Amino acid sequence: MEILYSIFVFLHIVGAAMIVGIWIGNMKKPTVHPRQFDGAMLQLITGVIMMGLIPALDMDANYVKLGIKLVIALVVGVLAFIGRRKYKANEPISTGLAHAVGGLALLNIALATLWN
Image 1 (tube, rainbow, N blue to C red):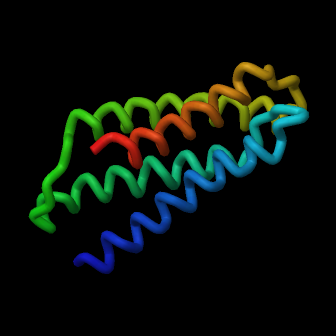
Image 2 (image 1 turned 45 degrees about the vertical axis):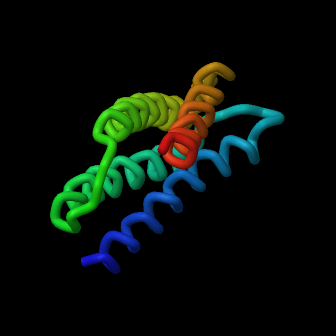
């Protein structure tokens, strides 16, 4: 069961890398790429699964922290969905939307690593 949890942690980190990596890579011309939405969904799905595995593995968890991270992840997912839709329709994507997706994902990484 611990190996399964570790696989979900790995996939969760890959999702974060997809969001933040694309954001940093497009810093000169900010946009929201469809792969950022894929990363956001990967993060949401794996995060919820890991939250479900916590009791099964008898792990201690800070559910306030996890709840805040979940809300931020939902916001990132919605914003990435909006950006993906605009990207596919060749509509302009505001700089604020692009930075909100990347910045909030980066904030979630900071919460995960710095809040003990």
